[in-house]
Length: 558
Image: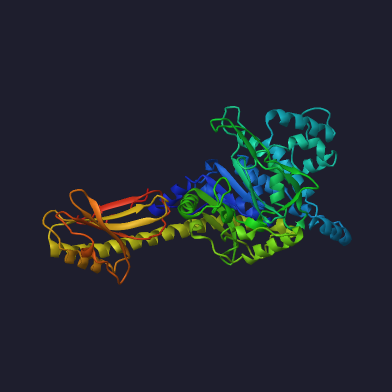
């Protein structure tokens, strides 16, 4: 169980905020994927439930984890399936070196991915079929396993499914595994509620090299099980996935309303384009989704800031780290894609991915990425040792959640202490001003900006009667400079017009007298400028009259 929260109000409030997250992501990591089970179980113990997430995104093994969550199954069912699979079975250890060399030459991988794809098909059949197709499959399953009537005593487990697959041709179960992203998104329960979560998968297109996002919006007619399989096709370990991709076309009426779509398909084809593990180009989904909009277009400027701020406060993403350094996370760039030769592209992509192994997380991701410290001895492609490392990996996932919450709460507390320190300095400064000028009112405000991550600190002086000389105003501004870097605005009465607006950097002072005349009841507003401190809270505003006896007031995070 997680540590008791007790009377740690900031920790309680942060955990409550985690319960409002609606997007879940998983990066790639090969056999390390078992850690995600531990991560999700620990989040559940804190009250962060799988049911609260609307969309799930994954790369490589993270795509498989995302699929599990998107099925809306229980964490116990997830755990059972992970325990029943033997990852070493995905490798063709019985093949000779010559056979493997030939396979690698023609398919750029040492092993056929068919055993891996069959496991993914099994999961899709077990958890995504509607009642009609489920009944139809049950009859076929019973017949092929030697039972002529429905109600076979052989349940649909992975072990029995492997026996079943030996009795049929792949085409015989195609209709049970061909659900598209659109169909997955639109599936309903008998009560009309949405049956599955929105699923999003990242796959690497080999030539030209680059990541491709699959979901119900961009690729509605792509079969989601095939896409998950392609994303989990580890480079060189498994053969590349060959598929034909058709562009999405939309037909709209005269009013611009969408009438129908076509294309957006991902069809397995031996003469198609080569696709491989999404981790080659975007192992951490945040590396890609942190820079593009839902249409897949790169964002810049304020739109990018707002997008990343929303991710920071609405998403959670499991990532893997070694020696406390993130294994991924760099900005996605257009110049990372495009090259002439498919095998060369694949090698280049893998090497590039390895070269990014010590890159730091972007700032916005610190509030949503849960770093899982990989246990010593665990290697992504070591399928033989994977079964013996499952318990350690789950423990690592559980510990990662505890550490993530502890570190974020620690950061919030440090920020609160900094705020209280600034308030103390500002109050001392105000008392000095009050003694010199007489009556005044002093406000300290801290407001979250529109992008929900950038705060502004400010204070405001209001003089009831009389005037304030320009020399006095400039001296006051000069004295305030040792507290912070400020943006200063001077308002004139009675229309409250801004007559002066400038930045004040440490050691400099604008000539206010050359810009305006201060009249009676002039308001001088100074605010911290370019403050990018991020609190893990929803929108919060502090507006405290520091002339009261209750200074300093308690920071409110709601």
